[in-house]
Length: 444
Image (cartoon, rainbow, N blue to C red):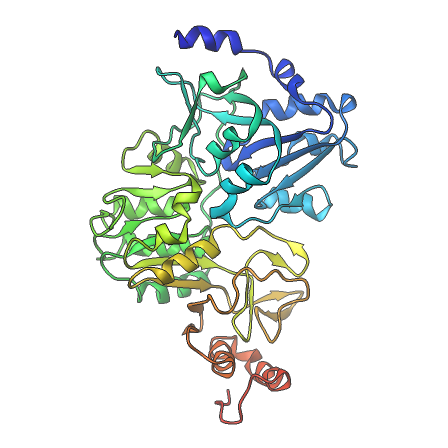
């Protein structure tokens, strides 16, 4: 088979490609940096021809054109499984709807439950064997391809080629249409850590040991942990994570990461997607050290637990006095999604010697008033990302507490001990009111 000839036969303009979409269809837009641009613009140009086209994406960087041309949702309805900043802003205007997922289950949703009529997928240039690599978002890419009626790829030579793993690409024989594009791979800048982030990161660093296997979430604090690790004397660290971020480059180049102590994927850095600056994309391009796997492997808690000493480090929005964690909403307002926090919290705790840390600033200031992130009860409408039974360690800038094995009154006392000092007395009063404070509890 001559793959170049097949490529030419399937190559069309973006306007021709999107003719595969019909009114009433469900259309997939890809995930993370693999979002489509030219196909999105072309579909938007068909606005007046189409009705009730439902679109799904994941953490899109920037608003899709189909939303901008149809602010009343009369023709297109956009949905996301994990809200980016841009999608969050659209959600505030009822222009983006959230689809809740447990991230390690997401491929199974497509194979078992979710209808998809047309898949749009951004990919790097085709290789000599006729394969299109998924780029740095292997994630649920193969599940999308297997469960979709029609596949259109947007080929972009600027895109990073991510080595697998497995299920990291699709063959041209499975593709229905090809278009070509030339726009820069979306980047997210490094998030500079605050003083609070630095304090929390320093508390985490005290708990790390040689040979630990790390998962880091996004944000200033996890990036600060990575920076501190890169300056430390830690050695033989492993990485098994969902998201590859800039701070991992610091750690690897600092010599702290070898993967020598891992039980599975020894000597490999394992992830399912990457989002970061050009530093990250350049580092992972064709890098045999980095293995991109589908998310039902990387985030499966039972796979995570096969490595010893797994350390999961993630952020949250607020916590109540019994340890319920909200990481994805502010009241009813969706901020992000469950993501892999549930997966790695459970997997790390199951790991021999594993530890799972949930981190947050103790409070923030709004209109001159101090607002505690530790509350007697969660804000009405807040999503419980982690039930209290799952939480291992909770960390603020005022300390770290372990919640496993603690009664409700012990939990209340522990959580209040790391609250902002200005709100502790009020939290004690509220704890008494809701019945989680014993007379013998310490007074703050």
